[in-house]
Image 1 (spheres, rainbow, N blue to C red):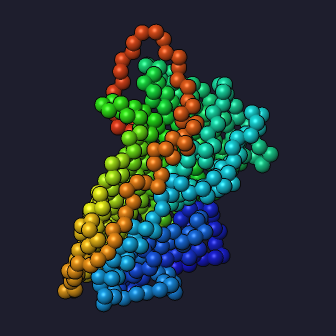
Image 2 (image 1 turned 90 degrees about the vertical axis):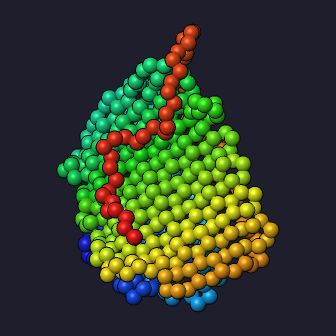
Image 3 (image 1 turned 45 degrees about the vertical axis):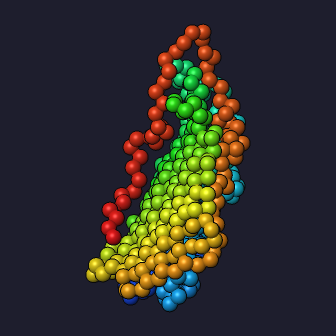
Length: 432
């Protein structure tokens, strides 16, 4: 599918130059496998974005390569599985976000000039940025100012401080603006919070709309607190992003989270959803390292069209001390309701032998034991030491001076929820 090159091309994160989406070939029960990932070619990212296992893709001229299911099932399934587990790199450590943030979201200038327009949507699949990439620069004094630029666009900027019980303190800065005809608007907020328990939070929220009608919203948060029962320090980060096209039935939503503690436990995950006209897709994934050698990873993604074609792929792996298992399923449903699936599994005994098994709804099956080394990562590539080193601004937040005497111990709840009233795009129920 190629959009009309003669029409205006707003800088919307889901507007595509050339889009790879599921073809009618899927109705002939062909499942496409290509380098282990959903593929979408977006003008916003200037590259093909891989998301692990099954390819859902074809465009006006088809995909780059189409493979039938191989006759050597055990080798092919293992090959896809290895690619699925090794191709993923967590996006929070990607350095490319800094340059793009600086390009599209320049920081405020001096007090006497207004902030520059931030009317560009967020980027897909950029994960959770480090705090240095967010450019949070809170003003040191209360400000309430506004102005009009030479081109007729207007802006405002304000800052302040809120105080509460148990030493609660929130310093904040808000800014925004709009074009002269009000067709383009944007808002941005920064804040830092603290109290006497050691709780500290750093956050950003952005929203906007451009002249083409594209709208978006995103938030980023970073928190450090002490667990109520274990007294272990924890750092948690999250990012939510969503955007919607103003010219077609297209939009996307992403929710990313990371949780770290001083004992070495690390948890990461994401939920994603997207739609482009008659196509919809979903993805969920997670990984958990307990800090003592146990690892759990999983992913589940699926897609569907308005005519009823559905397909997906999911897998899970668990390991501890060299012993563990992997298992997964690939499936496809036609508009007539006919379902095809292939399931597979691996048992790793820790002695150089691996039991591999699987079957499909077309009668294929395998059950073998092979000599093969077991490979997995018992520790995350980005853990407690890394996140502490990247959270200098969070750790430097100064709470109010505590008066002599005691104060009520707070109720440490779970990670604070995102702002209310920010629903993701409508997601149709999953049916397999």
